[in-house]
Image 1 (cartoon, helix red, strand yellow):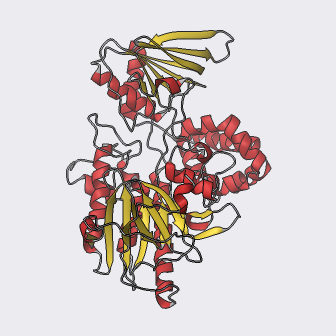
Image 2 (image 1 turned 90 degrees about the vertical axis):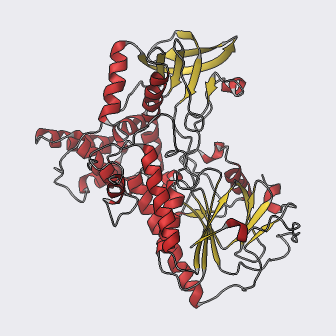
Length: 517
């Protein structure tokens, strides 16, 4: 059941005042309340699964996001028709029904095939449909509440497992369990970009503010991965093919195209790869190369080797010592990423055509600084392998370096607050958050939380591969089943008081968590 927000949050009544949460314990919500912060792919799939699972005890699933529910940034409606980077046959949000997305897509695109790369916007519609149908089909005692807003802090009340979730506008949600599904963070700032933040000449995150190119412009894109390709094609169309685009990255590597391949791997358990990972990253790279060569000698495709390694990624990552993980990140990561994250063939072909025509130039080099000079931006970089610096005046700079997963540098207000309180701990390698089983957050004292979880790409410190639908849906499903089982156990053995207080309240006075931000 989808509960109307107005029936829960009483914004027309005078605001209640609550005692300091550090001194008193407010009554628990009248039913189990699970708050999910973030309604993109991960948050929506967790919510959808929770609504579908059986619950004997009343349950309220609260989905909070400042954006439209279920779409997030990746699948929002855009002027340009961006394509998914994975074929439709592998984009189901349900591991139990691998063809679910394809079946949905065929309602509007009846000729869609499993190997087709379909529009991102259509995938957003699919996620919206899943969530809406799950809410409608849920029994009366299981409710979905959608809240538009931004969560800025949480607080755990003294001697209680009850959580208080603070929103930016003063509202406060009382919850039993919190799930962080914050999605991809924005890119790291570029050198010198601080002085350009208020300028239309600089786009710090192309997904938050998709840039529009104009005819005759010279554009510098920093980063040469998947986002670069999307921005180039959309921008070139907007400029009617009359923009000159330079794409700069440390190695100048551009993703290869996706392609169908057969399953030719003779080692289903990956024993040789696990043994190699236990020795060193150098040995693991050699073993992967031999596997790829062997597959190609038998008429296969190197992509099959990458796909096989990907399925073993969590195990291989756990086999690497901390020192070997650092070596991987320094020497191998860029090559793994460019082979692992590939482009739809149509996108790759269109990008290559623009390169052949001279509209797009890919540069291997390191950006040194950006400076605003009149109506232009002066970019300075050092080309890879050279000692001299190169300077160019451009009309626009776009940051396509990819998400910054280092939680120590996060701009997310909620995450900064939780780290300051010791509720969350950043991974020392800058890959995300330290978590335990099912994504339970580890706190500063080394304990795993029993009611605060994370799901999304910042699970990388534990699993490494956690950015694609295939991995994220598994984590979302496992977390939903875990939370449902915990809800069932609490129904048999109640641990907290029950009352008729609102699960949601207005508390402009704030609390301890606000002081930590």
